[in-house]
Length: 115
Image 1 (cartoon, rainbow, N blue to C red):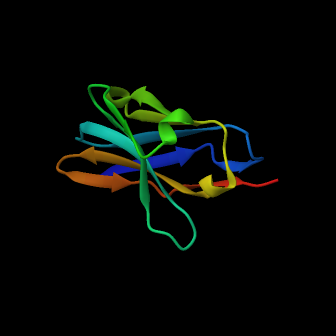
Image 2 (image 1 turned 30 degrees about the vertical axis):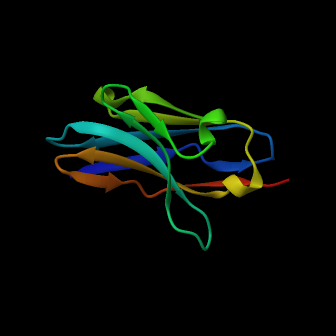
């Protein structure tokens, strides 16, 4: 089993920034990649950004201009730096990790963008 724990969510004003962190733990696992997804109220969960063990990254839509994924997959850690936040970025942000042929999810961290 692989456990993922997110941190860093919260309430931020429009235009502000937040940095999310995710740490994976468990026994006998090797992560091939980690990433971030989000789910807004009434909407389906969507991909935000992904990172492979080799450091390749992939972003959804035009989020790359405002969001940056970073981290060290070998150290089971990934971050999401979010800038220029907008009210439509409000969602629960989930960390995901691919390991041992499966995908594991964190519990999510709430990000609310509001004045």
